[in-house]
Amino acid sequence: MSTLRKIPPGVGPKYPQVVALVGATGDLGRRKLLPGLFHLASAGFIPGCRIIGVSLDDLDVDGFRTFARAAIDEFSTRKIDEDDWRAFAETLDYVPLAAGAAGLRAAVENAETLLGGESRRLHYLSVPPSAALSVVRLLGEAGLVERSRIIMEKPFGTDLASAVTLNGKLHEVFSEDQIFRIDHFLGKEPAQNILAFRFANGLFEPIWNRNFIDHVQIDVPEKLGLDNRAAFYEQTGAFRDMVVTHLFQIVAFMAMEPPTSLEPGPISEEKNKVFRCMMPIDPKEVVRGQYSGYRAEHGVDRESDTETFVALKCMIDNWRWAGVPFFLRTGKRLAEGQRIISIAFREPPKSMFPVGSGVGAEGPDHLTFDLADASKMSLSFYGKRPGPGMRLEKLSLQFAMHETGLVGDVLEAYERLILDAMRGDHTLFTTAEGIERLWEVSRPLLEAPPPVRLYPPESWGPKSIHQLVAPHAWRLPFERAWRAPNPEGA
Ligand code: BG6
Image (cartoon, rainbow, N blue to C red; front, side, top):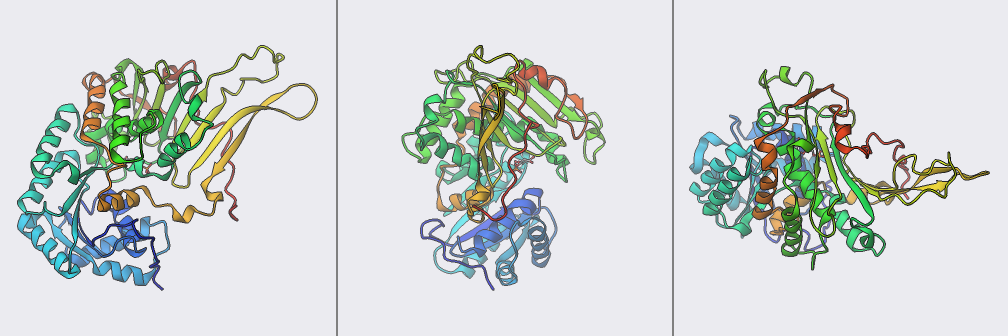
């Protein structure tokens, strides 16, 4: 039986959509975009949708349908209903890039005819930065700009000059209100929850500043390696792939002032103010790493200097945050896959506690957000251990989405953002100004990167990460695991 269900009005786009998925057979297409579009279409979020896969691969429609089914089988996190699949497969078409502007236009027009009535176009560019402009030109040449929106994947450019050029050329074809620069971390449910948590409660916002917060860590280690992405990764590296995009966007949500409303304009304004106050990244406060064995991977230069790991200190020089370091870390082939934000509070005077009480022994009290789709939060604090005397230990209050029974309602980040772009809602997308500023603060690092240091796979990165955060310590690996999920729900 089909999983089609009634979605409340207003959450989806008004008109049916023709999606041109450029780079459809790439890693992102397989892992996220095809499974995500399948879910959006079959759960009834979109009032009609046809998808045209476009890529360099020489496939026909059946070949693309087989590819899409394999991708959904492998990566969809939900059960696949065969009726839903058959209906979805019918909506898939394929055009190789070799068919040029005329071929693409014909496919889009055909899809529009099949949908009948009024529809909108969504072009999703899942291509590396070096290919983005030629696809934009192709869309212009094909006359596919009208009634369309375009989603651009990150990284947007590779430095300030290329981002400025890309924005300029993009604006020759598409107007700013048609452009959606995607950063999927902003589509993650817990990232948006940072805003709810900060601004919908009276408890935390008064202490959300340098008087009470000692430092912040945004730590996204990955167990994953390169998979099939060596060509992309060699040009990009961990800093461009993750920091200048995702991690800096999370910094902005953490650090921004309250916006006047949760609308795209006010949110971008406050985020951009954070970026304006960011100090240029000092290469002396950056650790670049490469896992041993990277250079032997298929498609990697034998003398590659690409970093597969980066850790750095970022400072925001404004009234709220002056003097509070934000430590960021991410890398491939690390010991664990985690996505956490950890806020360490300033330590109180501890002299009243007897020697050996354990006060402060497990680091400062912390607030921790887990950015997994089924998000978690924890507030850890010192409490008294029952029994005689005054022995202290770290305790915690935890919230876990999996205990609310609402986990099934979570949209994956890409699903949420594709739906927003179809609705023309820019709230969770990045702006040209913001991105250009981030490349500007990155310039000292890009111009004089410190040498890459080797680290063993399944470790936490090169040893010098400890000097970077001293006298603090990395929160990961956690000294205590998260509370185990309760399968019964709350
Ligand atoms: C992507 C990067 O944008 O984000 C990948 O290109 C990375 O290298 C991925 O693995 C991580 O995203 P998530 O949602 O799995 O944390």
